[in-house]
Amino acid sequence: LWKDPINLISSGCKAMVEPNCSLHDQTPIAYGIHLIYKKRWLSRYMQGLGIKVYADLNVSRKFREYNKMGIPKGYNAFFTRGMSGWLQSLEDEYNIAKEISGKENPNLIVYGGGEDVKEYCRANNLLYVTDFINDKSIGG
Image (cartoon, rainbow, N blue to C red; front, side, top):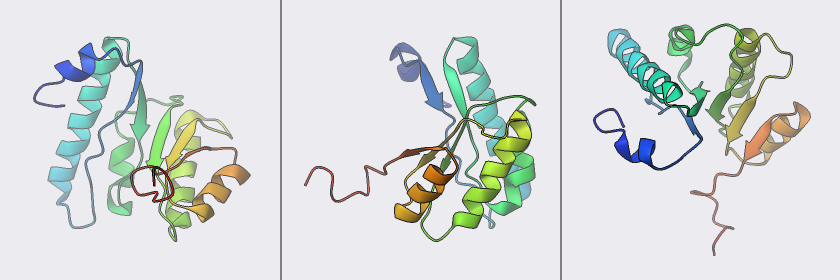
């Protein structure tokens, strides 16, 4: 996407999720900030073309504060990856979405994570999307 976003631009898509940069605790901070900058720059570019963007909140704890940079207060479109057994991480990201949006029930989409994540989303009125890539019950 960074080198050549034309396929996305010409696809006719109306909304997208920021590219996830895989920021882990082992990622050097300077490089992590660079990757956050790139995804935010690309997202702002897409917004300028009329594409709605969901901000990616799925980063390691080390990068959570840095990942807030570039998301304006009041913004209310977020996305994260659910992971079974990691509900505290999801709750932390939910709280970040609340903090940035200023809303008690922010617009947060959670992708995958299994039954415990699905139940958490149901209990907190979040949109849960089944992890169709890893779900063996879909498509045989």
